[in-house]
Length: 342
Image (cartoon, rainbow, N blue to C red; front, side, top):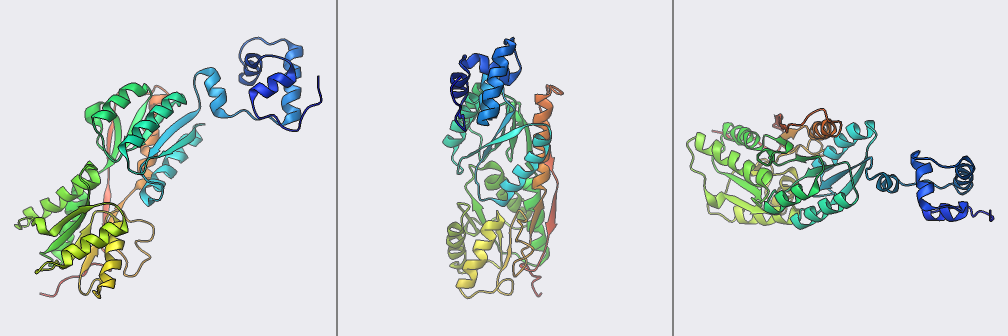
């Protein structure tokens, strides 16, 4: 056998150095099938000498399975998403699975491509942190032919297990807290309604609280845009230009609330003395910033753990039925919202 290099980067290289076939090397790596003792020893010497480490994907493809779970995430810079992924990782890595992440930047077409990629990679299952669920998603789910759990959207009508927040009830409760503080003109900084939960259900909860208090929802007090700071600033400009300004702003996310506070400060308005502000999500800096942000706390890590456990139950064939879990929330009224003086 020829002098061995320091490294081998593929099964093909190991096979060439051991003077055998790729399939024989694969049988040794996967401990499957018969291999002559002398050939096995030769392969093992090559592996030891070159330090070759087969990837989990490569080994999985040989066995037509893997120890991988695909996770589709809409944003990579989101506190809530990173917390959910941390929860997912805790459960699945303890069960021997590795995570394969696909970032979609809130684009449905990239979600669909990620699902196709995961099928090609033969992952064991998929966790989809979805921004929306459309007809194309239905088709992609049918094509996937893998256990699938959805986070953040209600997929129960599709026969899929899902974990989501009680967005409508949470937004209702937060709006009621502002109403209890004497606020009657409450502006809403929302996001695109294609995101049914964050975009639709949080707005619906805001409107429900107003209606229950005998106040007609005013469309001029409602905005919709993106999840970024620029959208928050644009919304503040629009709302503060009204002849009757709102005394409070409810933002659909903490990120939007922080962007709103920044823009209000630029306009020379004080929070909460001039305008109260509340967000939703209770991200890590919400209780650290000045003023401390009033918000809704969600157990995002717990959501990730629950979703991972639902998927694990499917992978281990402990259940054949779908489940829908709605997670609890807590209202956190802090310094950014004040009680109006009668």
